[in-house]
Image (tube, rainbow over all chains, first blue to last red; front, side, top):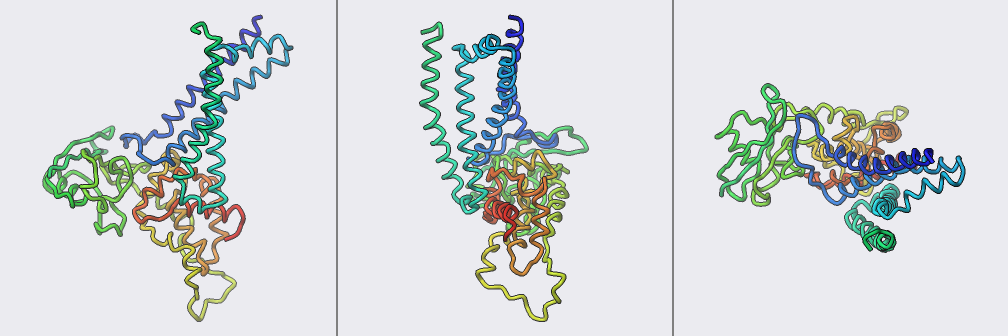
Length: 160
Length: 234
C-alpha cells in the first residue's frame, strides 16, 4: 500500500530526525559568542545532568511528532496502522527504542529531582548526592529493560 | 618554576575571532594567577588587556574562565592549577578586548531587581533605628556577601544563550532584600522575578554555586526566591 509506505517513511524520518535534533541541541547548548571561543565549560555534575535533561527532553518531544503520525494512520483502518507500526518491531529499530526508553527514564527521575529542589530549597546544599542517587536509579531501572529489549531484538535479527 | 599559559586573546581592531596565544613565565608555586598575568603584561606583552583593582578578592574585577571554570585570578594559586593554564574572558558578555568584557548586560539585570532598601510609604520615617534580631538577620546573611564579580552569572548555561535573563547574581541580590525584615519591597521584587526573564529561567545546573568566590549558596538562594514567588510568602 502506497499510503502505508508514505506514512512509514514519514515516521522513520521523524524518529531518526528526533535523534539528530537532540544531538544538534547538545551542540547548541554550549555555543558561545563569536568573540569568545574555547573548550566547553568544565562545570560539575549539575551542568551535565542539566544538559542530558534538555537533550532527552527534546529527543522525546521530537519522537512524539513521529508518534502522532503513526497514530494518525489508525484513522485509515487497522491494516494501514498495523503496517506502519511494523517499523517499530524491526530488529534494527530496537537500539533506537532502547534509547527512547532510557531517555524517558532519565528525564522522569531527573525531573522529579529538579521539582524537589523547587519545594525544598535546602536540598540544593546536597545537590551532588541527589544527582548521583538519580543516576543510580536511572541505571537500575534502565539496564534490565535494555537487556530484555536488546535480547529480543537479537533473537529476531539475522545474526543470531 | 616555569609556568605555561594559554591565553584567549581578542583584539577587536585586528581580529575577527578570538584565538589562544601561549606564554611561559617564571613564577613561584605560591604566586597567584594574577601575579603571573601581571608578569606577562608588564614584561612580555603590554597589549594584554584585563581588569583588576584590589587584587585581594574583594572588588570582584578579575573574574575569568581559568582552566575551564570561573574564578578570580587573584584568588587561585599557581600550584593548584594544571598546566598549561588556560585563561579566557567570562562568557556570555560581549568581549571588549582580551579579558575585558562589557559588564552592562550584567548590571542591567542587577538594577532590574531594585537592589536597595524599599521602605513602606505608608509608614512614617522611623525616629529610631530599625530593630532586627540575629535570627532575622541570619535568613539572608549568605547573600549579603556578593561582590558582583559576575562569576556566577557568566557560568550559567542559560545566561550564555539568553542575555535577557537577569542571572544568578541579580537574584542573589534580590534575595538579600526580599528576606530582610526591614525591607517592604518583597512583593515588588517577586513580581519582577516571576516574569519570563526572572528566577524561573534557572534550571538548577549549579554552575553558579561552584563558581562563587565568596562561597554563596547561589542556587539555594534562587530556589528560596522561586518558592517565595510561588507561595507569595517570605
